[in-house]
Length: 392
Image 1 (cartoon, rainbow, N blue to C red):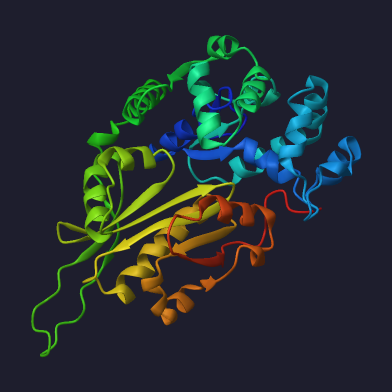
Image 2 (image 1 turned 90 degrees about the horizontal axis):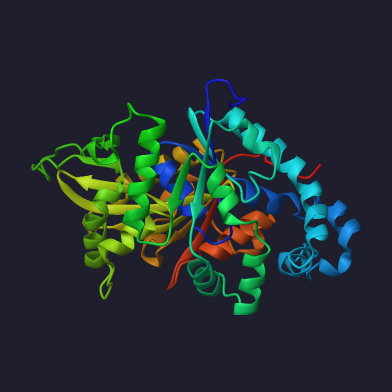
């Protein structure tokens, strides 16, 4: 049973490239608070963080990169080819990750928490979970994902797969198994069914009405503008809105070939806010929270929308949701056309930054990983000053 009173904790595990993160984000769409324990392990070895010096003392300074950060690629070549080396690394990082997970769960306001951890069953963390979920995929799928998404060579990918525990053992320990070889929709149906098994009284996602999270009042009627503007509202996007979102992006981004399936897949990575004028969708914001950093990578607004009125409540809702997830910083990739609204950005607390000027390694990595294709301007806002696994 969970040791956190008032919280239901789902422990989510599975071998590499089985789609654990997609399942975690789907559970977040259903209302769970998500924690990526593996990302916390990466933060624990950042320069100045608690495990940085012990890892150098154990494996040597040759694993450092030019910036004096630990090069995780060099470290991986050691630990994934030597089980004893992997055990030594885990002995240094796992206690710190457990402390961070405990702190985050205690701070979380949501009653359901999902902790994603590749070594969940091998650690004592599983004992504190109410339900164990396992994401499974075939070796062929794992190999393809590692080579395509992580740009590994076939030899590197096979070495990582072979270093993982027997997946059958994980499946046997699970209350819920998600077979993640198929489409996003097939995975989404399995996740909803697992959620329904855990919470029988919960309504199906498609049966849950989408309530506005904010309403933007129309501008005052004047003699110069005698026609009252329609009300603008902001709603949380759901997978059932995929077709509408794709249609809007294709309309606002000429030449775009975004499909409903593309957006369905995107729901496995991010959350969406919908800006509606009356019954018409006129704007979309897409963002994700990963490793305690909020990253807004999609920002589409119809040309007829008053940016000065619509942008502040949209971004304040992104920030509110991000702070609920204990985010330290907000990164926003803005279309160049919106940069002329300098006063709006200034009032919202965002400033243009380069990746290098972000300073904190986790923030820099988040910016590099999330920079969208095409022209965009990186804007930054710090959401909180106290940090998880900060230097001690």
